[in-house]
Length: 350
Image (tube, rainbow, N blue to C red; front, top):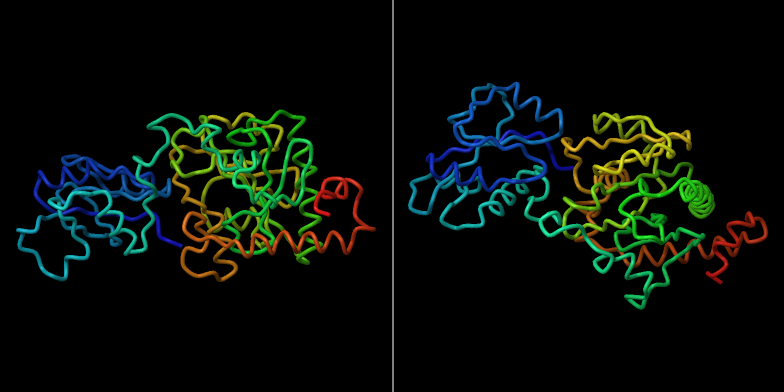
């Protein structure tokens, strides 16, 4: 997993450094304008929110050891050849892209650039929604659903880096489960119970992990290519809410689903605990949670290489359809012992 909490020190002329700092509007970074003196106290406070810091060398008054030096120059400058890999050339343009490429080469996570936020053009609409298009029959190959209740359907998706990875999705186009009323939340609990039963029966799983990346404020501020129609992840994993809290170091509140309605305003990370009536949530807008964070943890658990967790760049259609076939075969093989509700909600598979 890429490293957050990095300190980037920029070295260059006053004009060039100011220009670069003004372009570094990344969601995982706190940038101090040229001329603002900062100490390690400022940096540590940013680190508490899992963010990196960027500032001018002339303005950094601290003594932290973990520092990444970035040069700012133009092609007429006299710089050492060995410095080129960590140099931004202002006369090349695309300053933010240059910085992002350097951060990526150094295995640093600085988040999406804010210019990639849907907030610049308003909230995403139903016509932009992949799940609503799926329900409408676009693409035509929409036979992935493995379970359907009155208000929810369940399916594997292209980001299926392991078999048995499913999404629980409401038919209604809502940004997150925080927008669901109490009746649908009760149905959601039942759906989770059924899907957990199916996954444990199909894959002999001893534990399943359940989480949601909720979109607040109508999806404004999310990346343009994010799917902001509510979807809850569930997959076989030995990760628990406690282990995620331990690994991440993020502060979480303890809630029940009945109080989820109070968390509509900001995006959140919601994780179910072993006590299925209790959930952990973080909706701090100042905290940087890396994109697809829990997926990254699960991918590491399974020993998958690179960015296999990134559904935007890595598609696993064969595992998606294998999951459908695995579940269909298991249900058919065990049909006589299945609970009636599961039979009713999966009978369309046969």
